[in-house]
Length: 203
Picture 1 (cartoon, rainbow, N blue to C red):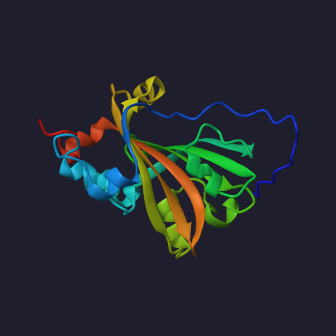
Picture 2 (picture 1 turned 135 degrees about the horizontal axis):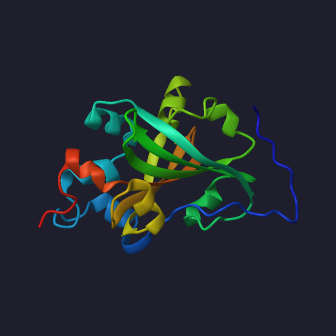
């Protein structure tokens, strides 16, 4: 079903998405140089700072298919939505999508919010129940994942959703396609992943 956007001067924005309240954050310079291993362990740096697909990485780590629970598909118009400043690189009017990434057996591994140009989202998310990586892989879409920010922080909503206490590590990045920004994505990973990646910090 196609999503259409009707401009209005009285747009009521939907409920907020779940961003971290940072204890620490870093930008492109930190990401390029990497972090001290005492701050973020090497395996976690591969997950957070690498340009590979987190969905594929989660499947390889857990040995299970990763499935998506879509919790929000909201038209936000031209509102900046409290998102990272890079949202302005995504043409508007925009649509916001929020999901949980979980194993087939039900364990939540990550939370993600993404922002899309509303008029084009159907081209890339033809099956809304698939992870973005799986949807784009089916279309053989060539992409570049451009990680721009990393966060360590708290969120009571994510503590409830993951059923584990924080703080949490997160990041945001742009997907580029044919030299143009396709979508902005903000991801937060569950500390449950220490089961596979080891401790988040090396003391």
